[in-house]
Length: 596
Image (cartoon, rainbow, N blue to C red; front, side, top):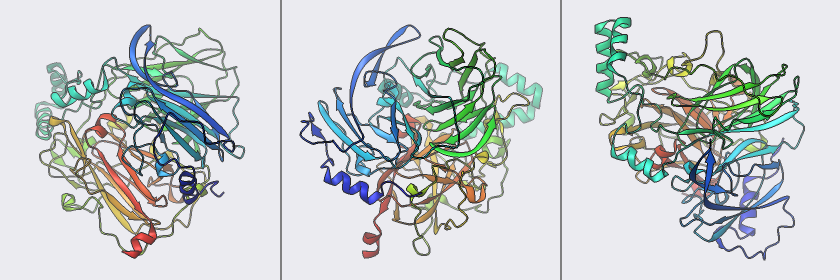
Protein backbone atom coordinates (compact mmCIF):
# COMPACT_ATOMS: atom_id res chain seq x y z
CA UNK A 1 0.00 0.00 0.00
CA UNK A 2 1.15 3.58 -0.53
CA UNK A 3 1.68 6.24 2.07
CA UNK A 4 -1.27 8.60 2.67
CA UNK A 5 1.27 11.40 3.02
CA UNK A 6 4.80 11.49 1.71
CA UNK A 7 7.72 13.17 3.46
CA UNK A 8 7.69 16.09 0.99
CA UNK A 9 3.95 16.57 1.45
CA UNK A 10 4.51 16.68 5.22
CA UNK A 11 7.11 19.41 4.84
CA UNK A 12 4.89 21.43 2.50
CA UNK A 13 1.96 21.13 4.90
CA UNK A 14 4.05 22.32 7.85
CA UNK A 15 5.45 25.26 5.90
CA UNK A 16 2.08 26.28 4.49
CA UNK A 17 0.50 26.21 7.92
CA UNK A 18 3.16 28.56 9.25
CA UNK A 19 3.94 26.31 12.19
CA UNK A 20 7.73 26.18 12.12
CA UNK A 21 7.98 28.05 15.40
CA UNK A 22 6.27 28.59 18.72
CA UNK A 23 3.14 30.73 18.76
CA UNK A 24 2.18 32.60 21.89
CA UNK A 25 -1.28 32.16 23.39
CA UNK A 26 -2.73 30.59 20.26
CA UNK A 27 -5.07 33.31 18.91
CA UNK A 28 -7.44 30.99 17.05
CA UNK A 29 -7.27 32.98 13.83
CA UNK A 30 -6.24 29.96 11.77
CA UNK A 31 -8.95 27.58 10.62
CA UNK A 32 -8.50 23.86 11.14
CA UNK A 33 -11.82 23.01 9.53
CA UNK A 34 -10.17 20.45 7.25
CA UNK A 35 -8.49 18.57 10.11
CA UNK A 36 -10.08 15.33 11.22
CA UNK A 37 -9.02 15.73 14.87
CA UNK A 38 -8.32 18.93 16.83
CA UNK A 39 -7.25 18.66 20.46
CA UNK A 40 -5.98 21.05 23.11
CA UNK A 41 -3.58 19.79 25.77
CA UNK A 42 -2.11 21.74 28.68
CA UNK A 43 1.11 20.84 30.49
CA UNK A 44 1.06 21.72 34.18
CA UNK A 45 2.46 20.80 37.58
CA UNK A 46 0.12 19.12 40.02
CA UNK A 47 -0.05 16.28 42.52
CA UNK A 48 -1.21 12.72 41.92
CA UNK A 49 -2.20 9.88 44.24
CA UNK A 50 -0.57 6.45 43.85
CA UNK A 51 -1.51 3.64 46.24
CA UNK A 52 -3.00 6.19 48.61
CA UNK A 53 0.04 8.50 48.76
CA UNK A 54 0.32 11.90 47.09
CA UNK A 55 3.40 13.02 45.17
CA UNK A 56 4.32 15.85 42.82
CA UNK A 57 3.91 15.26 39.10
CA UNK A 58 3.89 16.97 35.72
CA UNK A 59 0.79 16.18 33.71
CA UNK A 60 -0.45 16.44 30.15
CA UNK A 61 -4.17 17.14 30.10
CA UNK A 62 -4.31 16.92 33.89
CA UNK A 63 -3.60 13.21 34.27
CA UNK A 64 -0.76 10.67 34.48
CA UNK A 65 -0.61 9.18 31.93
CA UNK A 66 -1.93 11.89 29.64
CA UNK A 67 -5.17 11.25 27.73
CA UNK A 68 -5.26 8.35 25.28
CA UNK A 69 -5.08 9.78 21.75
CA UNK A 70 -7.21 7.52 19.55
CA UNK A 71 -6.82 8.30 15.85
CA UNK A 72 -7.23 6.63 12.44
CA UNK A 73 -4.63 6.09 9.73
CA UNK A 74 -4.83 8.79 7.06
CA UNK A 75 -6.41 11.39 9.31
CA UNK A 76 -4.97 14.88 9.67
CA UNK A 77 -4.59 15.77 13.35
CA UNK A 78 -3.99 19.09 15.10
CA UNK A 79 -2.77 19.19 18.71
CA UNK A 80 -2.32 22.55 20.43
CA UNK A 81 -0.03 22.19 23.45
CA UNK A 82 0.02 25.00 26.03
CA UNK A 83 2.87 25.20 28.54
CA UNK A 84 1.69 26.17 32.03
CA UNK A 85 5.00 25.26 33.66
CA UNK A 86 7.71 27.70 34.76
CA UNK A 87 10.22 26.00 32.44
CA UNK A 88 10.35 25.06 28.73
CA UNK A 89 8.66 21.87 27.63
CA UNK A 90 7.96 19.79 24.50
CA UNK A 91 5.99 16.80 23.22
CA UNK A 92 7.64 14.11 21.09
CA UNK A 93 5.41 11.73 19.10
CA UNK A 94 7.35 8.53 19.67
CA UNK A 95 7.46 6.27 16.61
CA UNK A 96 5.37 8.48 14.32
CA UNK A 97 6.49 9.29 10.77
CA UNK A 98 6.09 13.04 10.30
CA UNK A 99 7.85 16.25 9.31
CA UNK A 100 10.88 16.94 11.50
CA UNK A 101 9.58 20.26 12.84
CA UNK A 102 6.60 18.33 14.23
CA UNK A 103 8.73 15.61 15.87
CA UNK A 104 9.03 17.57 19.09
CA UNK A 105 12.74 17.19 19.97
CA UNK A 106 14.16 20.63 20.88
CA UNK A 107 17.27 21.53 18.94
CA UNK A 108 16.51 19.18 16.05
CA UNK A 109 14.85 19.90 12.71
CA UNK A 110 14.21 23.53 13.59
CA UNK A 111 11.92 22.66 16.49
CA UNK A 112 12.17 24.87 19.58
CA UNK A 113 10.95 24.08 23.07
CA UNK A 114 7.62 25.55 24.14
CA UNK A 115 8.35 28.42 26.49
CA UNK A 116 6.28 29.09 29.65
CA UNK A 117 2.91 30.57 28.76
CA UNK A 118 3.21 29.71 25.09
CA UNK A 119 1.36 27.31 22.82
CA UNK A 120 2.76 25.16 20.01
CA UNK A 121 0.50 23.80 17.29
CA UNK A 122 1.41 20.36 15.98
CA UNK A 123 -0.20 19.37 12.70
CA UNK A 124 0.45 16.19 10.72
CA UNK A 125 -1.27 13.47 8.73
CA UNK A 126 -1.10 9.92 10.03
CA UNK A 127 0.94 7.68 7.75
CA UNK A 128 0.74 4.49 9.81
CA UNK A 129 -1.36 2.48 12.24
CA UNK A 130 -0.58 0.76 15.53
CA UNK A 131 0.38 1.38 19.15
CA UNK A 132 2.64 4.37 19.89
CA UNK A 133 3.07 6.96 22.61
CA UNK A 134 4.01 10.57 23.30
CA UNK A 135 6.20 12.16 25.96
CA UNK A 136 8.24 15.20 26.87
CA UNK A 137 11.67 15.52 25.28
CA UNK A 138 12.79 18.33 27.61
CA UNK A 139 15.13 17.82 30.59
CA UNK A 140 13.81 14.84 32.57
CA UNK A 141 10.12 15.82 32.56
CA UNK A 142 9.11 12.42 31.22
CA UNK A 143 10.15 10.92 34.59
CA UNK A 144 7.73 13.25 36.39
CA UNK A 145 4.66 12.05 34.47
CA UNK A 146 4.68 13.63 31.00
CA UNK A 147 3.73 10.70 28.81
CA UNK A 148 0.64 9.15 27.24
CA UNK A 149 -0.54 6.50 24.76
CA UNK A 150 -1.48 6.72 21.09
CA UNK A 151 -3.63 4.15 19.28
CA UNK A 152 -4.00 4.57 15.50
CA UNK A 153 -6.62 2.38 13.88
CA UNK A 154 -5.68 1.03 10.43
CA UNK A 155 -7.42 2.37 7.35
CA UNK A 156 -8.27 -1.21 6.33
CA UNK A 157 -9.68 -3.96 8.57
CA UNK A 158 -7.08 -5.91 10.50
CA UNK A 159 -6.81 -9.71 10.16
CA UNK A 160 -6.76 -10.01 13.95
CA UNK A 161 -10.25 -9.64 15.40
CA UNK A 162 -10.76 -8.99 19.11
CA UNK A 163 -13.70 -8.23 21.37
CA UNK A 164 -11.90 -5.88 23.75
CA UNK A 165 -8.90 -3.63 23.30
CA UNK A 166 -6.88 -2.12 26.17
CA UNK A 167 -3.73 -0.03 26.60
CA UNK A 168 -1.38 -1.28 29.33
CA UNK A 169 1.10 1.52 29.91
CA UNK A 170 4.01 0.66 32.22
CA UNK A 171 6.00 3.39 33.95
CA UNK A 172 8.22 4.11 36.93
CA UNK A 173 7.39 6.92 39.34
CA UNK A 174 9.51 8.52 42.04
CA UNK A 175 8.76 10.96 44.82
CA UNK A 176 12.21 12.42 44.15
CA UNK A 177 12.47 15.25 41.65
CA UNK A 178 14.13 14.16 38.38
CA UNK A 179 16.98 16.67 38.77
CA UNK A 180 17.67 15.31 42.27
CA UNK A 181 17.88 11.75 40.90
CA UNK A 182 20.28 12.86 38.18
CA UNK A 183 22.40 14.76 40.71
CA UNK A 184 22.62 11.69 42.95
CA UNK A 185 23.71 9.51 40.03
CA UNK A 186 26.48 11.93 39.13
CA UNK A 187 27.65 12.54 42.69
CA UNK A 188 28.25 8.95 43.77
CA UNK A 189 28.83 5.77 41.79
CA UNK A 190 26.20 3.14 42.54
CA UNK A 191 24.10 5.57 44.59
CA UNK A 192 20.89 3.58 43.99
CA UNK A 193 22.41 0.10 43.71
CA UNK A 194 20.96 -1.55 46.81
CA UNK A 195 21.40 -5.07 45.52
CA UNK A 196 25.20 -5.35 45.61
CA UNK A 197 26.69 -8.77 46.24
CA UNK A 198 27.53 -9.64 49.82
CA UNK A 199 29.85 -12.05 51.66
CA UNK A 200 26.95 -14.52 51.75
CA UNK A 201 26.80 -14.39 47.93
CA UNK A 202 30.56 -14.90 47.74
CA UNK A 203 30.49 -18.00 49.98
CA UNK A 204 27.56 -19.46 48.05
CA UNK A 205 29.48 -19.04 44.78
CA UNK A 206 32.58 -20.67 46.32
CA UNK A 207 30.53 -23.70 47.32
CA UNK A 208 29.03 -23.89 43.84
CA UNK A 209 32.01 -23.01 41.61
CA UNK A 210 35.07 -23.46 43.81
CA UNK A 211 37.51 -20.92 45.28
CA UNK A 212 39.65 -20.38 42.16
CA UNK A 213 36.77 -19.87 39.76
CA UNK A 214 34.95 -17.53 42.14
CA UNK A 215 38.06 -15.42 42.78
CA UNK A 216 38.80 -15.22 39.05
CA UNK A 217 35.26 -14.10 38.35
CA UNK A 218 35.34 -11.44 41.10
CA UNK A 219 38.70 -10.16 39.86
CA UNK A 220 37.37 -9.90 36.30
CA UNK A 221 34.47 -7.75 37.42
CA UNK A 222 36.83 -5.65 39.52
CA UNK A 223 39.17 -5.12 36.58
CA UNK A 224 36.25 -3.87 34.51
CA UNK A 225 35.00 -1.69 37.39
CA UNK A 226 31.57 -3.24 36.94
CA UNK A 227 28.99 -4.61 39.32
CA UNK A 228 27.02 -7.50 37.83
CA UNK A 229 23.95 -6.49 39.85
CA UNK A 230 23.90 -2.87 38.68
CA UNK A 231 21.40 -3.24 35.84
CA UNK A 232 18.93 -0.44 36.57
CA UNK A 233 20.91 2.60 37.87
CA UNK A 234 17.86 3.89 39.82
CA UNK A 235 15.89 1.99 42.47
CA UNK A 236 13.15 3.01 44.88
CA UNK A 237 10.58 3.46 42.15
CA UNK A 238 6.86 2.86 42.32
CA UNK A 239 5.92 0.82 39.26
CA UNK A 240 2.65 1.81 37.62
CA UNK A 241 0.10 0.48 35.15
CA UNK A 242 -1.83 3.33 33.52
CA UNK A 243 -0.81 5.53 36.46
CA UNK A 244 -2.01 3.04 39.09
CA UNK A 245 0.16 1.35 41.70
CA UNK A 246 0.03 -2.35 42.68
CA UNK A 247 -2.43 -1.65 45.50
CA UNK A 248 -4.64 0.46 43.21
CA UNK A 249 -4.93 -2.68 41.05
CA UNK A 250 -5.88 -1.37 37.61
CA UNK A 251 -8.48 -3.84 36.28
CA UNK A 252 -9.34 -4.74 32.68
CA UNK A 253 -12.67 -6.52 32.21
CA UNK A 254 -13.52 -9.47 29.98
CA UNK A 255 -16.23 -12.06 29.47
CA UNK A 256 -14.96 -15.67 29.34
CA UNK A 257 -14.30 -16.76 25.78
CA UNK A 258 -13.56 -13.27 24.48
CA UNK A 259 -10.35 -12.41 22.64
CA UNK A 260 -8.69 -9.47 24.36
CA UNK A 261 -5.96 -7.26 22.88
CA UNK A 262 -3.50 -5.76 25.36
CA UNK A 263 -1.31 -2.95 24.01
CA UNK A 264 1.80 -2.86 26.23
CA UNK A 265 3.84 0.35 26.21
CA UNK A 266 6.97 0.83 28.31
CA UNK A 267 6.77 4.53 29.14
CA UNK A 268 9.31 4.29 31.97
CA UNK A 269 12.31 6.51 32.46
CA UNK A 270 14.76 3.75 33.41
CA UNK A 271 12.98 0.40 33.89
CA UNK A 272 13.10 -2.66 31.64
CA UNK A 273 10.40 -5.21 32.49
CA UNK A 274 9.72 -8.92 32.24
CA UNK A 275 5.98 -9.27 31.62
CA UNK A 276 3.89 -12.39 32.20
CA UNK A 277 0.28 -13.38 32.88
CA UNK A 278 0.48 -16.61 34.90
CA UNK A 279 -1.81 -19.36 33.57
CA UNK A 280 -2.65 -17.35 30.45
CA UNK A 281 -0.62 -17.66 27.27
CA UNK A 282 -0.13 -14.54 25.16
CA UNK A 283 0.19 -14.25 21.38
CA UNK A 284 2.40 -11.37 20.25
CA UNK A 285 0.89 -9.77 17.14
CA UNK A 286 2.68 -6.43 16.93
CA UNK A 287 5.98 -4.85 17.96
CA UNK A 288 6.68 -1.11 18.02
CA UNK A 289 3.35 -0.44 16.35
CA UNK A 290 3.64 -2.70 13.30
CA UNK A 291 2.26 -6.23 12.99
CA UNK A 292 4.37 -9.35 13.07
CA UNK A 293 3.55 -12.98 12.35
CA UNK A 294 1.82 -14.14 15.57
CA UNK A 295 4.14 -15.65 18.20
CA UNK A 296 2.72 -17.57 21.22
CA UNK A 297 4.72 -16.85 24.38
CA UNK A 298 4.41 -17.05 28.14
CA UNK A 299 6.37 -13.86 28.79
CA UNK A 300 8.35 -11.12 27.10
CA UNK A 301 10.96 -8.52 27.99
CA UNK A 302 10.11 -4.94 27.05
CA UNK A 303 12.71 -2.18 26.91
CA UNK A 304 12.05 1.49 27.58
CA UNK A 305 10.22 2.96 24.58
CA UNK A 306 9.17 -0.39 23.11
CA UNK A 307 5.59 -1.51 22.53
CA UNK A 308 4.13 -5.00 22.13
CA UNK A 309 0.53 -5.90 21.31
CA UNK A 310 -0.63 -9.30 22.54
CA UNK A 311 -3.89 -11.21 22.30
CA UNK A 312 -5.19 -13.40 25.12
CA UNK A 313 -8.23 -15.67 25.26
CA UNK A 314 -9.30 -16.25 28.88
CA UNK A 315 -11.95 -18.98 28.99
CA UNK A 316 -12.40 -19.19 32.77
CA UNK A 317 -14.47 -16.80 34.86
CA UNK A 318 -11.56 -15.95 37.11
CA UNK A 319 -9.01 -13.19 37.63
CA UNK A 320 -5.54 -13.18 36.09
CA UNK A 321 -2.59 -11.09 37.29
CA UNK A 322 -0.71 -9.04 34.69
CA UNK A 323 2.74 -9.05 36.28
CA UNK A 324 5.64 -6.80 35.24
CA UNK A 325 8.95 -7.02 37.13
CA UNK A 326 11.92 -4.71 36.51
CA UNK A 327 15.34 -6.24 35.91
CA UNK A 328 16.60 -5.34 39.37
CA UNK A 329 13.51 -7.02 40.93
CA UNK A 330 13.11 -4.04 43.25
CA UNK A 331 9.32 -4.11 42.99
CA UNK A 332 6.62 -4.80 40.46
CA UNK A 333 3.77 -3.31 38.49
CA UNK A 334 0.58 -5.31 38.43
CA UNK A 335 -2.87 -5.11 36.96
CA UNK A 336 -5.73 -7.59 36.81
CA UNK A 337 -7.70 -9.09 33.94
CA UNK A 338 -11.04 -10.14 35.41
CA UNK A 339 -14.75 -10.69 34.67
CA UNK A 340 -15.72 -7.94 37.14
CA UNK A 341 -14.23 -5.15 39.21
CA UNK A 342 -12.88 -5.99 42.66
CA UNK A 343 -11.51 -9.41 41.74
CA UNK A 344 -7.85 -10.24 42.31
CA UNK A 345 -5.53 -13.10 41.45
CA UNK A 346 -2.49 -14.17 43.49
CA UNK A 347 0.78 -12.30 43.02
CA UNK A 348 3.20 -14.89 41.59
CA UNK A 349 6.44 -15.66 43.48
CA UNK A 350 8.98 -12.91 43.02
CA UNK A 351 11.89 -13.75 40.75
CA UNK A 352 15.48 -13.59 41.93
CA UNK A 353 17.43 -10.52 40.96
CA UNK A 354 19.32 -10.67 37.69
CA UNK A 355 23.08 -11.13 38.02
CA UNK A 356 25.34 -11.01 34.99
CA UNK A 357 28.00 -13.64 34.37
CA UNK A 358 31.23 -13.42 32.44
CA UNK A 359 29.53 -15.45 29.71
CA UNK A 360 26.92 -12.70 29.38
CA UNK A 361 29.75 -10.29 28.60
CA UNK A 362 31.31 -12.60 25.99
CA UNK A 363 34.01 -13.71 28.43
CA UNK A 364 34.74 -16.60 30.74
CA UNK A 365 36.49 -15.83 34.04
CA UNK A 366 38.70 -13.19 32.53
CA UNK A 367 39.39 -14.99 29.27
CA UNK A 368 37.90 -13.58 26.08
CA UNK A 369 35.48 -16.02 24.48
CA UNK A 370 35.83 -14.88 20.91
CA UNK A 371 32.61 -15.25 18.98
CA UNK A 372 32.08 -15.77 15.30
CA UNK A 373 32.83 -12.16 14.36
CA UNK A 374 35.59 -11.46 11.89
CA UNK A 375 36.55 -8.03 13.15
CA UNK A 376 39.08 -8.96 15.81
CA UNK A 377 41.73 -6.32 16.24
CA UNK A 378 39.80 -3.51 14.55
CA UNK A 379 40.41 -0.18 16.27
CA UNK A 380 36.87 1.16 16.48
CA UNK A 381 38.04 4.13 18.49
CA UNK A 382 39.84 5.42 15.42
CA UNK A 383 36.61 5.54 13.44
CA UNK A 384 34.65 8.70 12.94
CA UNK A 385 31.12 8.78 14.27
CA UNK A 386 29.95 8.07 10.75
CA UNK A 387 31.46 4.60 10.96
CA UNK A 388 32.97 2.76 8.02
CA UNK A 389 33.62 4.64 4.83
CA UNK A 390 30.77 4.77 2.40
CA UNK A 391 31.12 2.76 -0.75
CA UNK A 392 29.08 2.50 -3.93
CA UNK A 393 26.21 4.67 -5.05
CA UNK A 394 23.15 5.66 -3.09
CA UNK A 395 20.58 2.91 -2.96
CA UNK A 396 16.97 3.32 -3.98
CA UNK A 397 15.00 4.17 -0.86
CA UNK A 398 12.14 2.25 0.66
CA UNK A 399 9.10 4.37 1.44
CA UNK A 400 8.05 3.77 5.06
CA UNK A 401 4.53 4.67 4.06
CA UNK A 402 4.66 1.70 1.70
CA UNK A 403 5.29 -0.72 4.55
CA UNK A 404 2.52 -3.14 5.20
CA UNK A 405 1.02 -2.08 8.43
CA UNK A 406 3.31 -4.91 9.07
CA UNK A 407 6.50 -5.53 10.50
CA UNK A 408 8.47 -4.43 13.36
CA UNK A 409 10.81 -6.46 15.37
CA UNK A 410 14.25 -6.92 16.65
CA UNK A 411 17.25 -9.04 16.26
CA UNK A 412 20.97 -9.17 16.51
CA UNK A 413 23.72 -9.66 14.02
CA UNK A 414 26.74 -11.93 14.20
CA UNK A 415 28.98 -10.92 17.11
CA UNK A 416 32.08 -8.84 16.59
CA UNK A 417 34.80 -7.69 19.00
CA UNK A 418 35.10 -4.05 19.91
CA UNK A 419 37.97 -2.06 21.33
CA UNK A 420 36.97 -0.51 24.64
CA UNK A 421 37.82 2.71 26.37
CA UNK A 422 40.21 1.67 29.15
CA UNK A 423 38.89 4.47 31.36
CA UNK A 424 35.24 3.54 31.04
CA UNK A 425 33.67 2.49 34.30
CA UNK A 426 31.28 0.08 32.60
CA UNK A 427 33.36 -0.74 29.55
CA UNK A 428 34.96 -4.07 28.77
CA UNK A 429 38.77 -4.02 28.68
CA UNK A 430 40.85 -4.89 25.65
CA UNK A 431 39.42 -6.33 22.46
CA UNK A 432 36.48 -7.99 24.19
CA UNK A 433 34.25 -10.19 22.08
CA UNK A 434 30.60 -9.40 21.75
CA UNK A 435 28.46 -12.09 23.37
CA UNK A 436 26.78 -14.44 20.93
CA UNK A 437 23.34 -12.88 20.29
CA UNK A 438 21.81 -16.20 19.24
CA UNK A 439 22.79 -17.99 22.43
CA UNK A 440 20.23 -17.35 25.21
CA UNK A 441 22.35 -16.42 28.20
CA UNK A 442 21.38 -15.53 31.73
CA UNK A 443 20.53 -11.91 31.02
CA UNK A 444 17.87 -12.82 28.49
CA UNK A 445 16.31 -15.79 30.28
CA UNK A 446 16.64 -14.76 33.93
CA UNK A 447 13.77 -16.14 35.97
CA UNK A 448 11.84 -17.74 33.11
CA UNK A 449 10.07 -20.72 34.72
CA UNK A 450 10.92 -24.17 33.44
CA UNK A 451 8.75 -25.17 30.53
CA UNK A 452 7.74 -21.58 29.77
CA UNK A 453 8.64 -19.69 26.63
CA UNK A 454 10.03 -16.16 26.64
CA UNK A 455 9.86 -14.03 23.50
CA UNK A 456 13.19 -13.52 21.75
CA UNK A 457 13.95 -10.94 19.09
CA UNK A 458 14.67 -13.81 16.69
CA UNK A 459 10.98 -14.80 16.96
CA UNK A 460 9.78 -11.56 15.33
CA UNK A 461 9.03 -11.72 11.61
CA UNK A 462 7.38 -9.13 9.42
CA UNK A 463 3.96 -9.96 8.04
CA UNK A 464 5.15 -9.04 4.55
CA UNK A 465 8.11 -10.52 2.69
CA UNK A 466 10.60 -8.18 0.97
CA UNK A 467 12.68 -10.51 -1.23
CA UNK A 468 14.23 -7.68 -3.26
CA UNK A 469 15.30 -5.33 -0.46
CA UNK A 470 18.56 -3.59 -1.47
CA UNK A 471 21.83 -4.39 0.26
CA UNK A 472 23.51 -1.68 2.37
CA UNK A 473 26.26 0.42 0.78
CA UNK A 474 28.04 1.12 4.08
CA UNK A 475 28.30 0.01 7.70
CA UNK A 476 28.12 2.50 10.55
CA UNK A 477 29.75 1.40 13.81
CA UNK A 478 28.10 2.84 16.91
CA UNK A 479 29.80 1.74 20.13
CA UNK A 480 27.76 2.13 23.29
CA UNK A 481 30.20 3.39 25.92
CA UNK A 482 30.12 4.93 29.38
CA UNK A 483 31.99 6.08 32.48
CA UNK A 484 30.00 5.10 35.58
CA UNK A 485 32.35 6.86 37.99
CA UNK A 486 31.24 10.25 36.63
CA UNK A 487 27.95 8.95 35.28
CA UNK A 488 28.92 9.93 31.76
CA UNK A 489 27.32 7.92 28.95
CA UNK A 490 28.41 8.22 25.35
CA UNK A 491 28.46 6.87 21.81
CA UNK A 492 31.89 6.02 20.39
CA UNK A 493 33.33 7.56 23.60
CA UNK A 494 31.85 10.97 22.76
CA UNK A 495 29.04 12.66 24.63
CA UNK A 496 26.27 14.54 22.86
CA UNK A 497 27.47 17.96 21.77
CA UNK A 498 31.05 16.73 21.36
CA UNK A 499 30.31 14.17 18.65
CA UNK A 500 30.38 14.69 14.88
CA UNK A 501 26.99 13.16 14.19
CA UNK A 502 26.17 10.58 11.55
CA UNK A 503 25.67 11.90 8.02
CA UNK A 504 23.96 10.00 5.23
CA UNK A 505 22.37 10.98 1.94
CA UNK A 506 18.68 10.75 1.19
CA UNK A 507 18.04 7.31 -0.23
CA UNK A 508 21.18 5.73 1.23
CA UNK A 509 20.83 2.16 2.39
CA UNK A 510 23.02 1.64 5.48
CA UNK A 511 23.65 -0.83 8.27
CA UNK A 512 24.03 0.46 11.84
CA UNK A 513 25.95 -1.87 14.16
CA UNK A 514 25.22 -1.15 17.82
CA UNK A 515 28.15 -2.61 19.79
CA UNK A 516 27.43 -2.57 23.51
CA UNK A 517 30.69 -2.38 25.46
CA UNK A 518 28.91 -1.90 28.78
CA UNK A 519 27.23 -4.22 31.26
CA UNK A 520 23.86 -2.47 30.96
CA UNK A 521 21.21 -2.96 28.31
CA UNK A 522 20.55 0.11 26.16
CA UNK A 523 17.25 0.66 24.31
CA UNK A 524 18.46 2.59 21.26
CA UNK A 525 15.81 4.82 19.67
CA UNK A 526 15.90 6.53 16.27
CA UNK A 527 13.44 9.33 15.57
CA UNK A 528 11.80 9.80 12.19
CA UNK A 529 12.44 6.36 10.67
CA UNK A 530 12.02 2.66 11.33
CA UNK A 531 14.99 0.31 11.48
CA UNK A 532 14.91 -3.24 10.10
CA UNK A 533 16.38 -5.67 12.60
CA UNK A 534 18.82 -8.26 11.26
CA UNK A 535 17.49 -11.12 13.34
CA UNK A 536 17.78 -14.07 10.95
CA UNK A 537 14.26 -13.59 9.55
CA UNK A 538 15.48 -13.60 5.95
CA UNK A 539 13.25 -11.46 3.75
CA UNK A 540 10.89 -10.81 6.67
CA UNK A 541 13.14 -8.62 8.80
CA UNK A 542 10.90 -6.83 11.30
CA UNK A 543 10.77 -3.06 11.74
CA UNK A 544 11.65 -1.35 15.02
CA UNK A 545 12.10 2.23 16.23
CA UNK A 546 13.70 0.98 19.49
CA UNK A 547 16.16 -1.90 19.75
CA UNK A 548 17.21 -3.20 23.15
CA UNK A 549 20.93 -4.01 22.93
CA UNK A 550 21.82 -6.37 25.75
CA UNK A 551 25.07 -6.20 27.76
CA UNK A 552 28.26 -7.08 25.92
CA UNK A 553 26.42 -7.84 22.67
CA UNK A 554 25.95 -6.42 19.21
CA UNK A 555 22.70 -5.70 17.40
CA UNK A 556 22.61 -4.61 13.78
CA UNK A 557 19.86 -2.90 11.82
CA UNK A 558 19.29 -1.91 8.21
CA UNK A 559 17.93 1.48 7.30
CA UNK A 560 16.89 3.32 4.16
CA UNK A 561 17.40 7.02 4.85
CA UNK A 562 14.22 8.32 3.24
CA UNK A 563 13.29 11.02 5.77
CA UNK A 564 15.37 14.18 5.27
CA UNK A 565 16.22 15.91 8.53
CA UNK A 566 18.33 16.13 11.64
CA UNK A 567 17.05 13.28 13.82
CA UNK A 568 17.93 12.26 17.40
CA UNK A 569 19.46 8.80 17.88
CA UNK A 570 19.80 8.01 21.57
CA UNK A 571 19.53 5.58 24.42
CA UNK A 572 15.99 5.72 25.79
CA UNK A 573 17.15 5.25 29.38
CA UNK A 574 16.33 8.83 30.32
CA UNK A 575 19.35 9.57 32.49
CA UNK A 576 21.72 7.94 30.00
CA UNK A 577 20.43 10.31 27.33
CA UNK A 578 20.70 13.26 29.71
CA UNK A 579 24.28 12.21 30.52
CA UNK A 580 25.28 12.28 26.86
CA UNK A 581 24.25 9.01 25.12
CA UNK A 582 22.79 10.69 22.04
CA UNK A 583 23.88 11.81 18.58
CA UNK A 584 22.46 13.37 15.44
CA UNK A 585 21.42 11.16 12.54
CA UNK A 586 21.49 13.65 9.67
CA UNK A 587 19.81 12.74 6.39
CA UNK A 588 20.93 15.28 3.78
CA UNK A 589 18.78 15.92 0.68
CA UNK A 590 20.14 14.04 -2.31
CA UNK A 591 20.36 17.22 -4.40
CA UNK A 592 22.45 18.99 -1.74
CA UNK A 593 24.82 16.03 -1.35
CA UNK A 594 25.33 15.66 -5.10
CA UNK A 595 25.93 19.39 -5.55
CA UNK A 596 28.83 19.16 -3.13
